[in-house]
Amino acid sequence: MQPWTPHINTYDRASAFVMSFLSSARSTRLNKFNMINHLPVSLLSKMGNYEIKIHGEKVKVSLVDNTAIVGAKIDELKSLLQTQQNPIVGLDFKFVKTKEKSYKGKILVLCVGTRCLIIQLHCMTIFSRTIAQFLSDESICYLGTGMSEIVQELYHQKYCYLYLSGTGEVPVNCKTGVDIGYLAAKVLKKANIEKSNLVSLAEEVGMDIKEPISRCPDWSAIVFSDEEIKYAVYNAYTSYVIGNKLLGML
Image 1 (cartoon, rainbow, N blue to C red):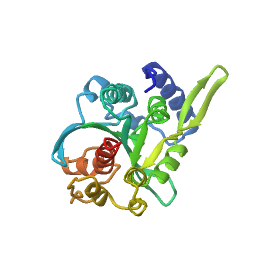
Image 2 (cartoon, helix red, strand yellow):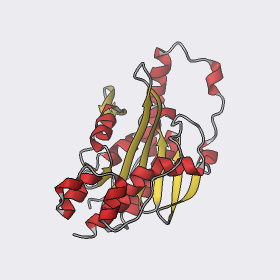
Image 3 (cartoon, helix red, strand yellow):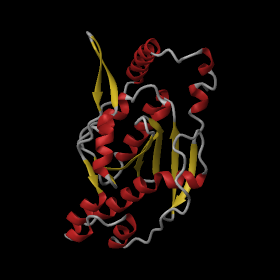
Image 4 (tube, one colour):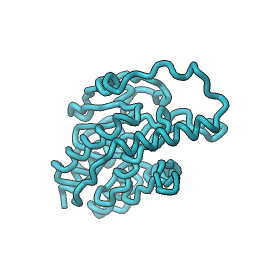
């Protein structure tokens, strides 16, 4: 695996400032009342932590809604990834679009080992460059379901890039996104399982898993119950576990 490029929080903060300034200049809807409920970063970093049990394992989940603490959380995943045998990350991108094709709720889910990170993108003024660089790392295999749609939606997300001459917006390019069904078909040499669901794919590698029974949460909510968190990470975490089993067979 290639050495990691350390993230620079200053870059994301500078990008956030520039984009926030430009957005404020363009918008006439902003007013003084939207400045409430902004918690200090020191407090935010202590919140949004969950420990759930899924597929018999205790999984620690962090829910993040602020650009300022995303970098540290991504670094935690990077460090954990270096201790794993296979360079894989469970990936999911959940969103709800309105009739006007704007996003009502939008979350990115990343899983490595028994750690998952849920990033509430709709709460952020910009798409973090740290996230974009992580997703663009071609030494990592990103596993999930419906990966074609996920990669396409990610490409439509733009992050701010600072040039000497000004700023620009660059798409998020995840080139190594792989459908877990495709990986299973390749490794097990069974073409007919490529379109199988996660439960069936788990059976192929000797796992007995159950789908979450809770209803789909409102992705624009500010807090989630343990069951809703389990629902949120199910696809990404299960894809990671199955992928790890498959690659262990090689």
